[in-house]
Image (spheres, rainbow, N blue to C red):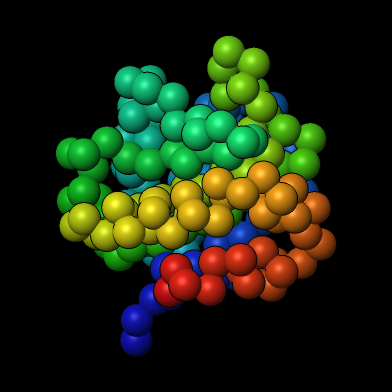
Length: 145
């Protein structure tokens, strides 16, 4: 049985998060619970964030592990967290959509590319932030699996 890279189980709606660290830990925990990564991957996500922000602009952040975290990835996966109230990722950069990524090998590059295409359109980001169902969000990323 293959695990889907993205499923409704990996999407969280209307989450309130107080800090960037809380946001990254919460996102990483979904990747752990859904079987994509080892628990230690979360610390590698925080380490990566300390090196350079994963804020991408347009209310989007894409936290992921450092390059040396590859062995902690069991299979490629994405977690999507909708944060309508926003969470500050530093320097006043407010994030309303968090994409936690775990890529096996170089698969994270394809995953990042697919996400970037969708979230480069401001209307898409607004629609995803306002989506009222996990299925509505999943529909934006049909090409990811």
